Each structure stands twice: as C-alpha cells, then as structure tokens.
Image (cartoon, rainbow, N blue to C red; front, top):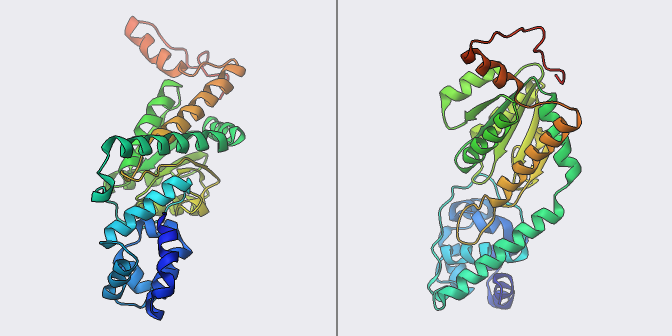
Amino acid sequence: MTVIEQIQEKYPFLTRKQREVADYMLEDPERMSYATLREISQDLSITEMTILKTCNLLGFASFSTLKYEFRKYAAQQLDLLRHPGVEFSTPAAPEYELGDLRRLLSEIRNEEAALFSAFIHNLSLDDVFQAAGMILAADQVILCGRGVSATICDYFATLLTLLGRGVVNVNTELDNAIYAALPLLTGNTLLIAVSYPDYYRMTAKLVEYARRREVKILGLTDSKRSPIVPNCDLVLTSPTRTRMLPNTIGAPMSMITLVASAINIQLSAQGCQGAECSEDFFSLFDGGSVDSGSQQAECD
C-alpha cells in the first residue's frame, strides 16, 4: 500500500482539522517529500502537535517516517519535481524496510535504472544542441553552483576546458567568488547556473542579477519548478531523486557530457579545433613565437 492509499484509507476517520492536514498531504505529494513540520503548521495555521497526531492516526510512527514514505512514493512514480527552500538531510531507512536488505537495495537499484531511463527518453536533443550553441556563441562563460551543484560545475568546467572553452567557475557559497563574478556579468557573457536540491538562495539571486543585466542564462536543474527557471533563457532538467539520498548525480553528469559532446560535434562540423589557445601557449615553452594575427581562431 502506498502512502497515498494509506492516507485515503484512514481519511473517513479523521476530524475536520486532521482532514485539513491530510488534504494538504494529498494535494502535493512532492511538497511532502521535503516539507518541514514548521512549514505545514504555518501554511495551515494548525499546531505542530495536531499534525503529529494526524501522522500517528494515519499509521506512521513519526513525521520522519511519513516523509520517507512520500519520498519513496515519488521515486516509484518517477515524479521528478522538487520543492525549493528546504534543508536536506539523509533519511534513515525505517525499521520495517530493513527485514530484507538485499530486497531493499534491489528496489533502489531498479528505481535508479527507471529514473535514468526516463531521463534519457525525455531529454530533448534540440535543447542540448541549443545549449551547446549558447556556449559556443558566448565571449565568456561563467558557471555557478553550490554543494552538489558545485561538484557538477567542476566536472562541466573540466569538459569545457578540454574543448578549448575558457570558463570562470563560481562557488556561490563563497562571498568573494560572487563579488569577483559580478563585474563579468556584462555583454556577451553566458551564465550557466547549476541548481539542484537543496536549492541555494544565493545561486538564485545571482541568476536574478544576471537577468537584470540582460546576460544570457543557461539553467541546469532537476525541475521546471526550480527557483532559477523563471530567469533562464534555456533550462535543461535531469532528475536527482532517490529515496535514500538527497541527490544522485548520475543523470546530471550524463546531461553535461551530452552538451560537451554536442559542442565537439558542432566544432568538428565547422572544421574548428577546440584547443587552439592552449596549443599556442605551450608553443612558447619550445622557444616558438606566436603571431597573433595568424593564430586568430577562424571559428570565433
């Protein structure tokens, strides 16, 4: 029985206030995956004690167990949205899931496989080529993200560097890095904002600032409901949901690999070399000289 079915089964036996709590849960299962007790209390103007009592009446030992079941339900349904603005933690598996550890891990493996399969099936190659074109057209590229998003930024920066595209990589958790990036958000700059849960407010604000400066913005995130989406020119989404961990980054890494591959394809089709600048630079160590006029890239 899913968490939704369990709530529906117990619903007729709830009081009016308790039904308000149950309605809140059923209205948006995604929100319940990450909502805090305080948030629900504030949204409904109902005490936290009433919410906890409702959880117990619905058959859940604790609020944490209820949230685990909503995360499990969302993963099984391949609901790939996330609720912004909530602190993450790694949920412990409830005791009732631990009777057969191999079965549990097998279920998680199958969820991961289904998640990735759905991502590959739904990914638009036109959007991937458009993202590659935005990167190639920019005079400079700035990557920004925090936490697991910063890890994705690091990998993306490595790929772009191998393709001869210089990048500035900004960890939005570091104030100095943000201040250093602000003057660069002008002209034909492309900001690539990477924002996976937990969504970080400073990343969203940097994107908002870039939009105000009329800078092109490519967003990489998990959901069209991500806070960076309204200010992006193009958004590529890849799922990160898992019942056991806050994020799984297999799909995001595959997505940026595909973008890098699309860049290489476009450069190859144009007869361009992606690493001309680095070749010119290292020629200096062999005593060679660089003629700036003759070495200008033909594919600028």
